[in-house]
Image 1 (cartoon, rainbow, N blue to C red):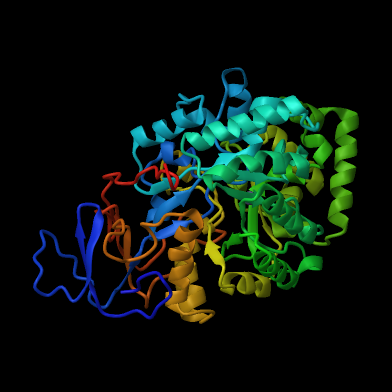
Image 2 (spheres, protein in one colour):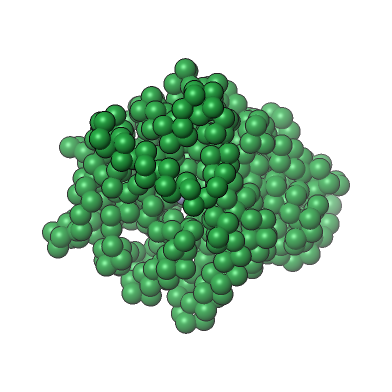
Length: 521
Ligand SMILES: [Zn+2]
């Protein structure tokens, strides 16, 4: 048994009563209705996925297959500035359009954040959920999609909307400062909005303004927001992107350590891969991403604007030779383009007999902007340095998916299926980057402590019975960039709130997950 604290594993029995852990230790004389014989296996607290985009996926398929089958029992949703709520009446369709095909697929019944949380709860989920409200969506609801600064009136409304979401179940606020419209906010706006977190102890999660050339400035901005607003800061998927920035994680981690000694409570999460995954539209310059989907698509087809876009995208790629061969088209939503999923943009350009920038614009039009890409842009040394830092928590940066149904039509980054098993199998066991106990602690107690979940993340009496039982010798990720819809291996049982939800290969679909209340609510 590994208790989640980082302490050495030891032989022990675990007794569950109701949804909680009743006892841990030598329980020889105990009687139980059900006994799971885990001899030779490792029993650990269920894993906490600190950074996910399962907001709609859990409504489309509440079984959370790709996550549960890695041992994940809690998902933090609403990240990178995007939560499906609040979606005020007049802005609902515009907000819905931020969620692509899945946004059209769900029955969109909610307006307020509280209504969305109720919808999740009523639908049921296999895993627990920690909801976070997204700044881009709040801003879209108050100010629309334009590139402008917030006025005093806007600020008051933004703050009110965030405070409302916090009172209706949000654990914090997330920003996505490379995505429209969140990227149009300046630091002062973010401080003003983050201040609403302070009275309730909410967390400021941030996909920071740059993960490449302006990485340091972006880290300092996040720290400054924490300092000025008096809130905890959590940096999402920490990395150094682009060859010119490789090695920068050393300085970045030092800046984080220093901020902590100065009293700003900064933490971060990371995924164990050297490629990122984002929307294809991110290849467009900022000016072209203003105004919402219809306006953006209009620019891609307008002769003069299109020519300007092609020139800018090509110029940017020139600084990064070979870029198009390191960018895979991940998910699309049209049947016509589905065979292209998993191919590089260079290969698609060759096949179509045009340039890569033309392919980018054409695909965005054909897919109504709803297309993803994977980029190989980080170096292994940085991935290892960030993962092994004692503050690291683990976030898959992905939605729960499944190899069947509408979720199975996509071509996701393998992290969707492999993140947690990869940390345990590849990095802890095979590479010995850290001990198995330390790997488990990153996914359990460290994450629970960041979130203020005092009754999760540790196998101790009284804690919620979120438990994973795995084979430490065989646990591994099977998903690849070519073939991503592959479940992790070596996970034997997953128990959520005392209910066995995964029994070997068999998903029980009893939906024991809860939408967790923020600390103090
Ligand atoms: Zn992000």
